[in-house]
Image (tube, rainbow, N blue to C red):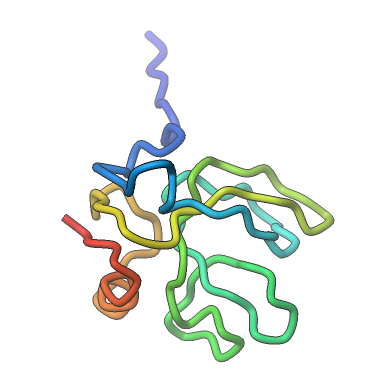
Length: 115
């Protein structure tokens, strides 16, 4: 018997968002050495203005969670566009990648409530 595991689906983490998709933006992701799942927390790299996975231990700007990746993205040798949730939303904490106490506070400051 083969057991298949389904990856996180687009916006699976999202409970609610503002009318008219006001919660979303298109941003530029930095080069990604690994595929990123929907629900990946992102920080903004200070030097480039590009977004990359959130890391509490970083010192390049990504130590602050500022967005949540809306849909999965593949590995990329170049920066790529991506849709993110940046404000005014409710999300399922268990479906986010990279969530910790600091990131929860960062998101709340953006109007993103983690449930």
